[in-house]
Image (cartoon, rainbow, N blue to C red):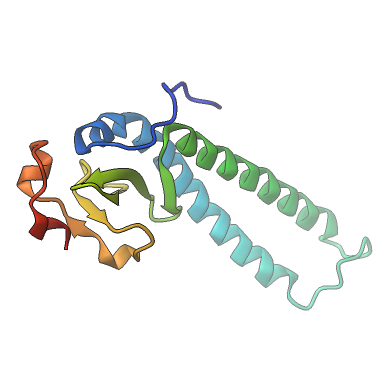
Length: 154
């Protein structure tokens, strides 16, 4: 099911990123739940397939084929969720955790505003390409929409 949104943004302020959270939260919530479910079903399917000869003579062949078909359908749905986020301008970083980034600029430097499912608003940022562990808190000045101090983006 496609959700309506206004269009892709190339860059977000903290306020703009927070304004998109109602929609992003819904998409990411669905995506994270389905991601975790797919991972678990793949794990179980791998366990069930271990040592099996995948042929029509196997008593459970049809059921296993059906499970694989359902997983493919769910993978397509996950890709649709990712495309919905990209259409807004948001990039998925980690599906099961529900971690996304919003492109932004602080002091004329490109950065990523970072939000994770369960957080009430965008409170972190990191340099592009940095690991999730490198998320840094936004300063009060940034949250108020004022210009970032140099020390905040080091």
